[in-house]
Length: 152
Image (tube, helix red, strand yellow):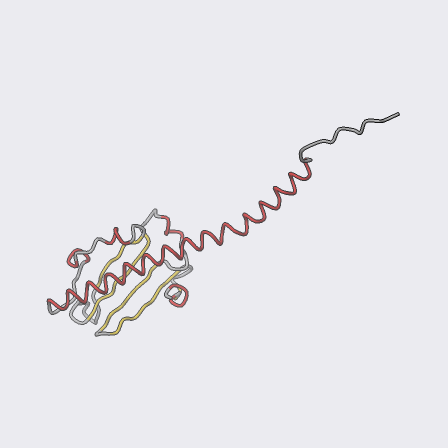
C-alpha cells in the first residue's frame, strides 16, 4: 500500500518574517544617519561654490573700480541660482569696516531650509584682506571653530 506524502506548505512563518523585519530595521538605523550626513556635506559644497563665485565676482568688480562691492546685487550675482539653501552676505573689514582693502563673505543656511539642521557648519566664511583669503566655519554648540571639518 502506498501512502501519500503530506502536502508541503508554502510561505514564511511569523518568526521568519519578524527576523527579516528586525534585520531590515537595524540596517535602516545604521544607513539613514550616514545618508543624511552625506546629503548635508553635498549641500555644503553648494555654499562653498557660492562663496567662490562671490570671490571671483569681487575680483572682477575691483578690476573696474577702486574698492570691492558692498552688496551681492552690485556684483550682479543671483545666489539662489547657485544654492537655494544658503544666504550669502557681505561685510567690510578693518578697524572701521570698509571695502577698500577687503571683505567678509558669509554663507548661512536659510531659515526653515533643509540645511538648517546642519549643526557642524552653521556658517561658512571667507575673509579677504589684501590679497590673502582666510577660510573659516563655525558650528554648534557655542559657535565652536569647525573650519577643518567644513572646508576641504
